[in-house]
Amino acid sequence: MGQKIQQLQSMQQNLQNIVMHKQQVESQLIELNSALKEIFTTAQAYKIVGKIMIASSKDQLQQELEDQREVANIRLKSILKQEESFKHSIEDLQQEVVKELQEEKNEQ
Image (cartoon, rainbow, N blue to C red; front, side, top):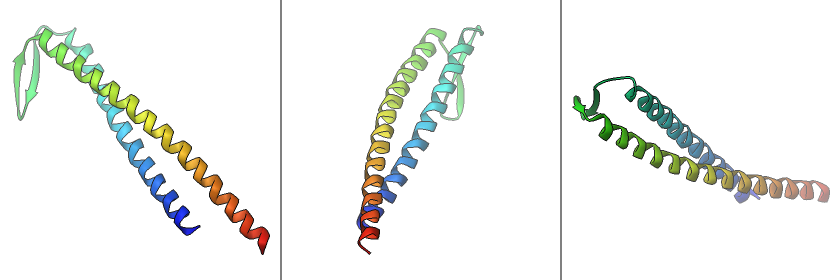
């Protein structure tokens, strides 16, 4: 029983990490979408490389941002699947623990 509770706590911690990672990717997507919108409103595009900002071709920069957005969307889909899987596993394990606790209580 104690082992299942520890496993449940570990799974909940892993779920929290997944949720934090999901939030980071969602934030990255918001930034990418914002940058893509801004490209269309400006005549000259710049990008940051290391600690310097350099002029860049709008088309090239747009393609880079779209590629990054595609990768981020794929990562987000994967994270969402992981999150859903962990939630189901946690729910199943919680039900097992509750059932065992009720059985122990009934035996007393």
